[in-house]
Figure 1: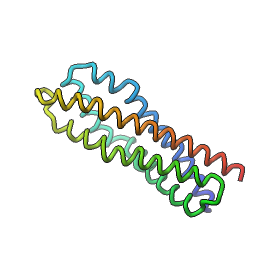
Figure 2: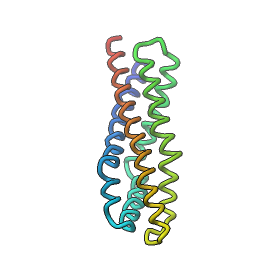
Figure 3: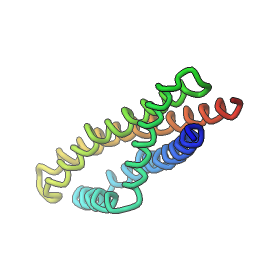
Figure 4: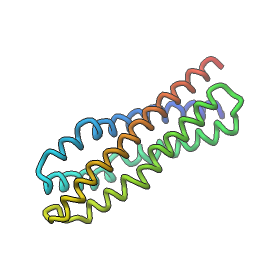
Length: 164
């Protein structure tokens, strides 16, 4: 039973991390650049609209479910550290939870909240928007890399367990 649970969590986590890496990559590769090129008020309004809609979409169950699954893999890997793939499970879970979830909570969400509290047409918005574009995008790069690295580590764990 534990092997089925572990395998299920590994596959769910690998797929979830991969999907989220793709979302974050899109923002890092072109969405933020495009928003930065349009009128400041339009860019701020668009990003605020994205932030409102994302929490109402299928993104949130995937975001939270993948985080819980990855945390579970850290625990399972720690309990069975001597088994093949356990170290990759532990590392993948830690990389994801810290590099994606903690970074989101500590950096990206507060920046989103600050942007939402800004009048897009105000003169003060220019400073907030310029900082947002650089800082939010930097932390989004971190989330992209962490999600992709976790995906790779979970694939390594799946491969190691398949030989077991």
